Image (cartoon, rainbow, N blue to C red):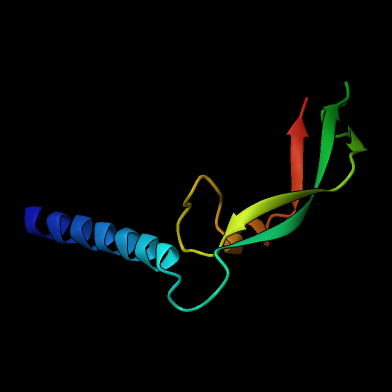
Length: 90
């Protein structure tokens, strides 16, 4: 059991380090970051819990990084492209 946990931990650390190095060394030759348009909105709950008022804001651009894990203080592009709606609960 301890051996399996150690192997799993080492595998996770190696994949994170490989992801970080591929981003820093630009392997393969690709852009490090992209800009994705995000559509934020406020969700204001009403007295009836099944309904809420939506207030849409102007679209914003978010910088994302082309990697498997969050790096350089940005979320990965594969995640940001799937979540273009940003709900802000009030």
